[in-house]
Length: 253
Image (cartoon, rainbow, N blue to C red; front, side, top):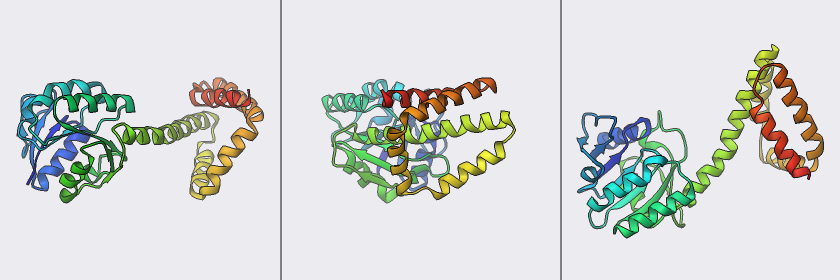
């Protein structure tokens, strides 16, 4: 069974690490704020965790990703792969790749493509970079679902973030609209309207949204200006409505 280091034992790293232990892997865990749970080999630093591990999973945060790599890369052995699972920009992933290569370690940019709670190691992952195939080779037999892209580091992170622009933006709009509907006394009506629209969505829906937005940008910008005024009157900050108005005004200019 492989020896895998897990750096960061929070919600995502802890769940993935525990599933690796349950699958029979030797897991060397390190987190400066969270003690390693039973079943893991507790390490006192990134370097101590990486020593002897064939695969290092960095699951801390994009803010800590570079520092963790610099602290641990020198301890990783020949043939080891450093896989960064943090949600970071493509530029940071490419920087991590360069630092790993300079330290003699292959790098994998791994994007976690769904929420980890409830899925753990089974959460779909998208990987690219020199070490991506080895990430799948090590993790797939343990229960992971890893899709490998034939691309340089940063491509997987980019795809995840592009999806986030859509999905997190959609979520923000839904939350803001329901908050305003609650203030207006018609939350149940709007919630059902949203459910009906999402249930009926398909390929034609995406095309209609894109084409209609460009074609009717002037009229829709005025509509969203009225919407921001209404939300102000309801004492609901019009964050998403204002952003939609600004986008429509840019497209109409």
